[in-house]
Length: 219
Ligand SMILES: *Cc1c(COP(=O)(O)O)cnc(C)c1O
Image (cartoon, rainbow, N blue to C red; front, side, top):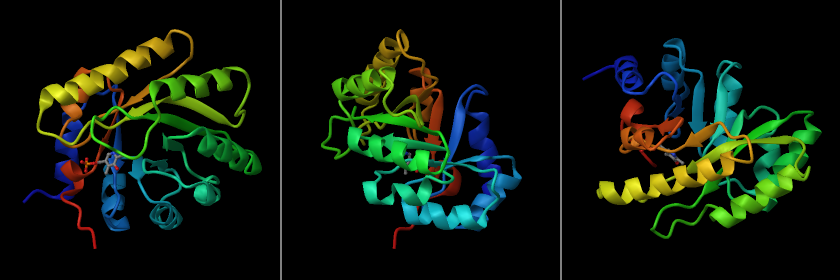
């Protein structure tokens, strides 16, 4: 059995140096995060607000925490004081609340717009049209306390590589289209099972959990 540090180092080697690695630590204890931190990892992703806050409180303060799971408006206030990036912006309403809470904290919060690219009936994510509308509002001066740094997408949960590739390519196309008139730097796509394919499709940030930490134990 490989140690966590060895597993991390193996994955790290498979990711090009110019692609960001978000280590998805959801369900894993703070000690496991600390081991990766000691190996040099600074960017971690969590999908639940309460778990994120608890880990933030006990772990080193220079960790860049990314929220990658659906966010409810009444919970934005708990993470606004410290969160680095909210990757899961899936409505105009949540963006308004993030902007409001960022202002209260005197911060500017980075966000990614989560786009629904999967064919399956996933609940969350903006259409390309919704995302363009939000970007237009931002360009007109709305949401002054947030910076839209990029887009995030999750492919269909399937073995069919062609299907996944098609979905990543659609998001890459849209990213390129928007980049022609609005500055973006992050295209967040790719998880444990599909990050190599995502990188081939232009991903600049991958979110990897189980390939580093092992299977999650949901209780
Ligand atoms: C859990 C999760 C991941 C990581 O998934 P793995 O398959 O464990 O790598 C990536 N992105 C999001 C949005 C997630 O919820």
